[in-house]
Length: 440
Picture (cartoon, rainbow, N blue to C red):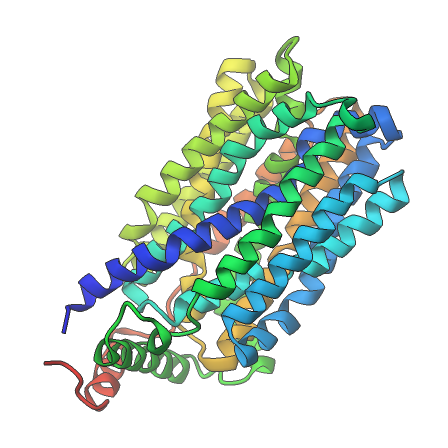
């Protein structure tokens, strides 16, 4: 039987490419309106405030649907539910091409939120069933490379598709929504055929390896849940650590989506630039985001390390956005690169904290709860950016709101801790030891 380290690396190689591609498409389809913002204003008369509301409404319906979606996935399995999510969001994203004005824009964004709800927290929960705690931040970070890759590829691709203006009697933004939405439906077929629900269903693991992995994961969940005292979904509201995670994640998501939806228009103020040039420059900070996700989360092997890394990364986001708000094009873009580098250092580590305190359906619902409240930041960030732009005439004024909330998130991160103490770790080892031995 292969060692746990070898098995963990094998699982990363087998599962992660498919999950990353799925999330690339998801993030691309939820944020591609950033490239279309100026054209929607010209062609449909959608103001900056209306655009910010529409961008944020996705997260309102997405958030409200998160917990039910994750609880259903816990019952029916990841393969079926992720496939359903992908088919739904692919069709609705492509139908964004039929938007006629503000109200149809709002309606389609809300439908897209309902369709895509559960993908991210569902995969976060899915990964808790495949990786023990010390490997989980690394796995989460690898998965979140999908966000960075989507933004790296999406901005130049969106800029290129916008040049299809007039072909077939369609606007460039209509082609963009169509050609970026349909591939999700085809990828769903591959997910259905290739994604195993749990280790014991994986063809690349022996039965003994799969049973041993499931036993080790279960032992950690039992120990963490016992130490935290949170055994039911209703108890999450009383768990101070979970509420801390929610607060930090809310501030983090405000920053991520403020940049995701408004970076193209911010870069557009740097000079006379074509849509392709804006797309290429928009991709630069997301290259740094990918580097951060790849290099740093793997070092968060304990709760203490994770807390320190999160605090430093939140401070880095504050510093980066401050540079972006006060500096010219070169230093400002460097600031956005600094902030983006820290984005996916925070997120993969942060989601290991609920997994250290909850188990079973409570863990599935708890992760969804964290994402539900946190994603209100996906509404607040774009809304405040759009409102401040209309109120002040400056596209950069909303960045100060982001700096303030991320500073609050940095302060909250000082108080994070895992569900298990040093003594509790022994409980997990003891529980694992009492599982039937499957090692050769």
